[in-house]
Length: 75
Image (cartoon, rainbow, N blue to C red; front, side, top):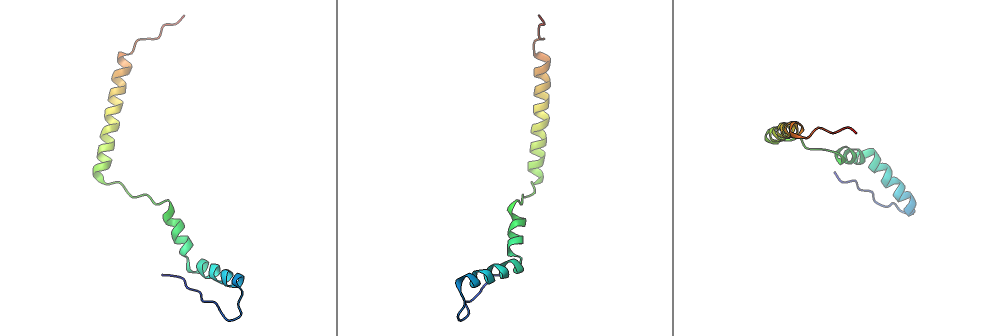
């Protein structure tokens, strides 16, 4: 829904800009834009499953690497 303001007779450009910003604020356009600014889509089920499997696989690999690592020698 577009916001439209027409210049009245003998109205300064500053008054017109003030009226325009006032109508934009009242219409709620700015609030809608700010709400959608940081919107994140929900991940699909397949993407969730794949990321969970990757996480499990990384944990298993890390556990194997820790078992195979040489113990640190103290001085």
